[in-house]
Image (tube, rainbow, N blue to C red; front, top):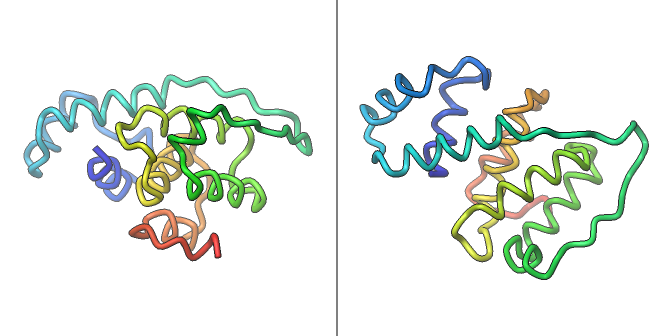
Length: 149
């Protein structure tokens, strides 16, 4: 599924410029992705698109207390990366919650940092955030955690 998300990001720079589901399924299948993975990725994206977010007014920050299940699922690297993104003002509290929700849907336990970064990228992409090339490069990084050290 993650490979499909990366493929979509690389080929459709505007989230809303993606073809309709039927056409997209056909294109992804032609590239060589399996039907089951395509369906899972498109369901995941549909859920992301349908998610409503409500941001706090500028300057308002809330302390996020993670449930034990969230701590386990996100792992130390994921939680550290969220803290980094918030401290760098790359995500808002509302986008943070969306990242957490989407990560909790993956089968991995804990979610590897490389996959977690792709989730962050998809959330930012779907909400048409301005992405600096260095941020995109880091999010597409194969899992090296340079930012956390």
